[in-house]
Image 1 (cartoon, rainbow, N blue to C red):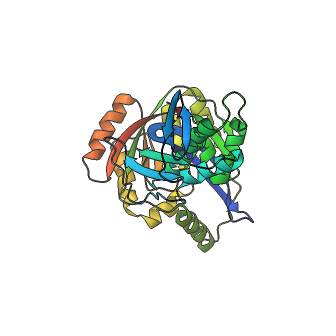
Image 2 (spheres, helix red, strand yellow):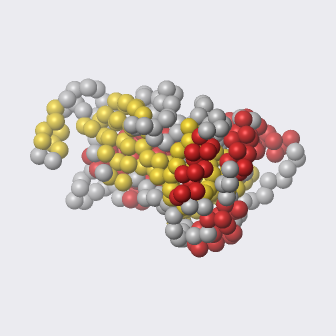
Image 3 (cartoon, one colour):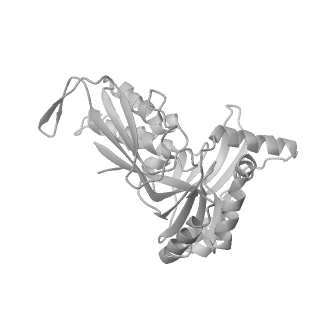
Length: 321
């Protein structure tokens, strides 16, 4: 069972005060883009019937392999392949809920940047939830419906439910409470990846440190109405002007070289730019598909990024292929 799942960019990421549980209340607008990972779940051990074929293997339970997708410039060296891999944890959750032994090989083929602020690990977890549910659940009367899978996803991480949903959506709470957003048309993006990743907890901690040092009173974040109007009308220029990320100052402090990348994209005519999520990937909004192609070519020649890729959005969430 193979599931394709998209990357995300946060069009808005408003970070509120720290909650008693250590998380922050967020207001975020997720946007799924056409950079995809694929997760294949293959039964291992024992005997499994699949589409009239009997598969017999004994390779041990819950194995994980990771590879780069053909042509993708992603560094998979730091992706865990043990039980701490988020996709493996997703498979274990499905197995626990259904009362089966998690004897499965997860083969992850990555095109989403690793630790790049585009939710690649969360996307893989979402794909594993869907794939394993298809393998182990009753196809006629499934015990795990869509809402229950979204609930399992929220237990794994704030970005996992959106990777299942896709499209464009407003996320509240830790980002897991989702409401689809009205979006018209297609938006064209250029993403500049960086060498090495940024730890999401480290970026949040730096954000908290800066706010405390500045004596900043942290206000409750609100959804940008300018951004929502731009999405609903398909106005790319208005969307570019409304992009925002409260984590960007912290990401720039931890990785100052990102300022040069952002400046380069703006100088080349991007109509919107921001650090994606907790970074270090930088996202640039283009006026059109042709503009995105020109921007990507010029940005790629400046040496300000590890790799430059184009994508469009919104696109669907986790999909069986």
